[in-house]
Length: 207
Image (tube, rainbow, N blue to C red):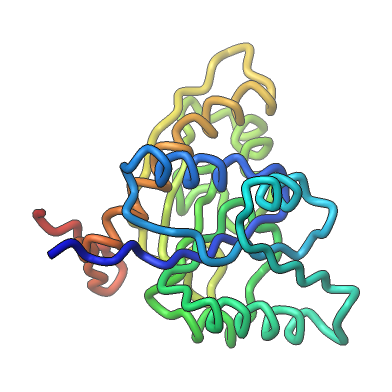
């Protein structure tokens, strides 16, 4: 008997390239999931327009429409719960989540960050910071989310060498190439029940 596709909520704030990668993996039959809600805090985000053009369900929760960030995120959490989201993925989401939001999806909330965590954590400028620090290798990390920003148990990582002539844009483009493979793979492992959190570690179980 085939298991039902994983009900997926995807949070976006920008261009949505990771959302597009997730959608493409689903369309190709590589990811047994369905997107039940695309949530955004930015109505003008290109990802919102793209999701609507694909016919995906979209909910927009701008901070300015609510009395506080906590209220906006509470409304987002309710929408995700009402949509039946079993896993929520931060795919280019630029707002720190409240402890209440994180608690509502404990063990079912993933983020992708453009560095090899714990390096360059807690910033929206991880790529620029890596270049400024002079590292020779950076990359990206998919991790479960905890109340401490970018400090949750690591699921998957991919390394990206830094070239001598890299700019933030050229380095980010290569990091994105890895992100677009890594995030759907992490979601698929979660959907298959192959991820087990043990303290700070995530063990990947045999199929």
